[in-house]
Length: 304
Image (tube, rainbow, N blue to C red; front, top):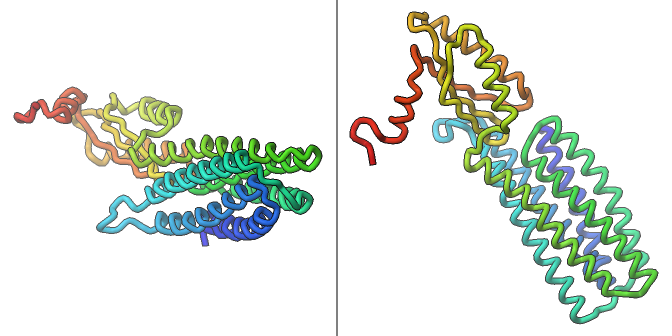
């Protein structure tokens, strides 16, 4: 089992245990904050299970039907995860408003406080583990999961603080106020997850600093007279690079391949955690303007 899939299994088990404990105390105590945390843990379980199958699918090798692999399944999973997190945040806000309106009383404060302390300790350990796997694999799904559990860590801390305030003051409205704030924070945290997933689905280019390094590698080769049409994208696990190299017109093809192999070997070293699919094209002169015209449909009677 890959480190990514093992991480999702461990996250699923931890989230399931926390869900059961929090739901029991949340329903018994009437605390909207604890109940909100229980719902969030339930969603954590479902998302981690979904992420397991997303990673499993993304690791499948390319075939005749999916010739570039299924790496973008990870991006789809990230968008779905972010959407589910947003929905859970909206539900928490709804529950907080209902408690503020109806003024229900929070009971069993001591068990609720103990549950949240245990939840914080367990979630902290899980976050450290997921961040370690995310750093080792640079997997977008694990990074999303780690970010999600980080927000849980913050929300659990806020819930604990709210319960303690209610415990010492008897002001049940505090539980509703803190629950509302947690809902807002959860929705805000989901935005980054959704954004990264959507960017991958739309074939967003690699980070500017990575592109700059690729350009520097190409420009530094002494036998390259120029380059154009450098394009980059990623599916979350594989980086795709295309570029046109301007070489000597009388150069043998084997020499051109030697040059591109040297350039590709340096590009791959920029991130050894990702797979790279690099496609060079060889030009005897700089034909960027002609290529641009073709792309815009201005040649062969295709002008619109």
